[in-house]
Length: 138
Image (cartoon, rainbow, N blue to C red; front, side, top):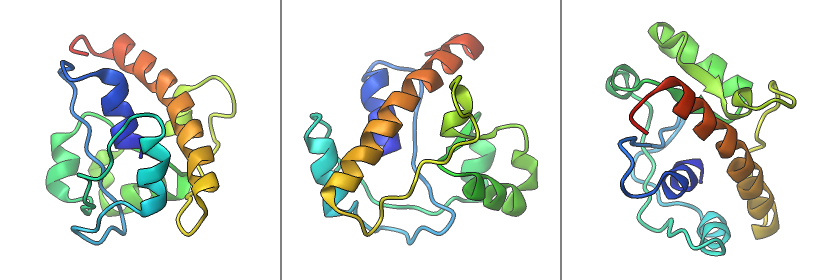
């Protein structure tokens, strides 16, 4: 959901690209029905999404890796030590509870996904401010 929310917030003319990749993702899996419903409610179409694993090529090609939990951050750094300095939790860019995790809604109801969607959407505002402050091409 974070990838599509960020893309939506940046707009189609943004020089930035966002890609979702998981530390334990099975390649080619579609988004869950609950995630599709949660994003559709805010006019974002998640149906084109298919999962992909985080690869050395993706890590090398990116300026910033944003993860949802501290455990994800640790896992990424364990697998890709060279990514140190560009892996951050989503809440790290805010001013309140920067160590907080975004709970994984997998297996939850649509209500749980909507709650997670709203948390991600709110935190992405701070991420966009960080991006504007640190890179010119946004």
